Length: 143
Length: 444
Ligand SMILES: Nc1ncnc2c1ncn2[C@@H]1O[C@H](COP(=O)(O)OP(=O)(O)OP(=O)(O)O)[C@@H](O)[C@H]1O
Ligand code: SF4
Ligand SMILES: [Mg+2]
Image 1 (cartoon, chains in turn cyan, yellow):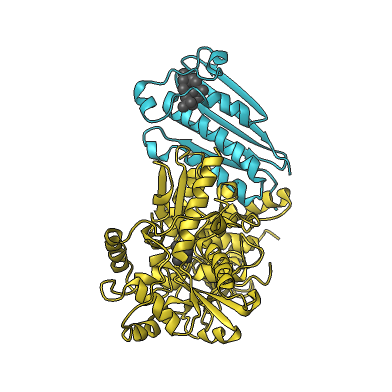
Image 2 (spheres, rainbow over the protein chains, first blue to last red):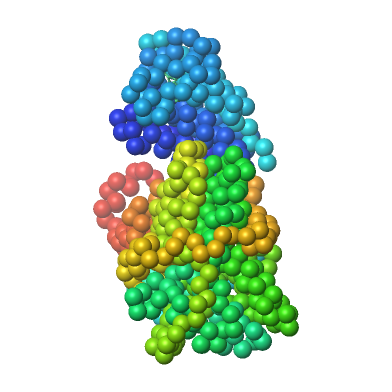
């Protein structure tokens, strides 16, 4: 029988704004199927949603790779966008470079990255200006 | 939970096994097996979608027979607001309908619309006293509460913990009747809900927010419609027993509840699929600025319920007309009426989607499901009896179906088998096969 790791892959499309959030929604459905604790599901989906939206808004899209094991959910969102010059600064609540148009859409409060931190057990941001950004989100599964 | 009662059931003899209903079911609760569309009890939320969609009327909503009134010394009718909209309101006003209810044998009539006004007040008080969570979701539609229990466990804490208008009406009706008739003891009184709704029947038998329902029986609007009409023709002077204003009566239609909430930020949504879309947004933590959501499983709200007689749109116009003739409320809601309107207990998660209680096994099953899914044609044709190819692969993983239930897989298997047979047929024993004789020489 197949092994007990589930891997999921999603393309995060920046062209069609209506599809933003589809990847995190899909992960949420899968976790529900697996009987993962609703609280864990909520944390994964909120954190992943924020990362997904960042890839759409700040980096013109990217990809999401998700790995689910009996111990943890690992979400890696990577893009080939402009990169973040100062990650520490970007992590500060309220810090945002979002344009006015983006703000009119209801984003740009500068709370995405801080919320990812808050809802996950481990979080890593690797970013290089002009190359892209990779955000790793890990949530442990407690049963 | 094994013996969970459902109002919605299958009339086996009428079912043609056509698969119309399986695709409409919002919780994937129906499978056609052995030519009959069977309902999986633990998944069914009694929304009535299949009742509405079955071309052969094989899905029915069971309610109690009117004879049940005879089991009680005293009887009280609780008419749902939707009842009023079944009749031409210029000829058959609410006073006549209530009077007719007494003429067909009820000792007392208490409007669920009044119960609704009490619920509005209690809900507004709750919102004022609790800043979060937001939005709160109405608990009035039992199909929606059950939908949350089976599909949206994260939203359970957002259910407004105020009993449904039906339960609140039952409480107050019994109390009022006993006050006016001191000789009556509560057990002698049968309280009957006159219902547009299948899910309400289920919630009376398997109460959600109360330990025991205050309602003793449920009669469908269909079953009393003509009886009342007959009586109304005879009425010269209708009794004045109105208790509710437009604020309660308008609950029959979607938005009627939400409009009574003291907030500029309300949302109302009708039709089970539309509700699911809104709940998916809520789960993603969107719509945080909304204070209150009214959600009804039926299109249009309760006036679109499966046990109604009148066309939903016609009923809706009547509701609209009432707005101009009725005062918003006849009497202010009192402390006594508000007593015990809070939930006695909270609805819990009913897990129907987990593949296995052991996460390791569940992960394996999920991989297996994906593998099976890729072998299916992705046509979602329903011929296997499951609503989609994905649902069939889930059923297989759960051990409830097999891959060859798919006609396409079966056909391919047969084709391969036929091919193999022809190949076998073409093979000759070496003694007869002169094609291979030349080559075989010398190899020995
Ligand atoms: N994938 C990314 N690529 C480039 N820049 C990014 C990326 N993610 C975040 N940033 C930068 O970090 C800042 C802070 O991100 P954060 O998600 O915390 O806030 P926001 O996206 O601006 O607003 P909010 O998430 O509250 O809508 C962004 O304004 C942006 O400058
Ligand atoms: S909308 Fe009304 S009639 Fe329909 S299921 Fe809900 S409560 Fe019942
Ligand atoms: Mg952000």
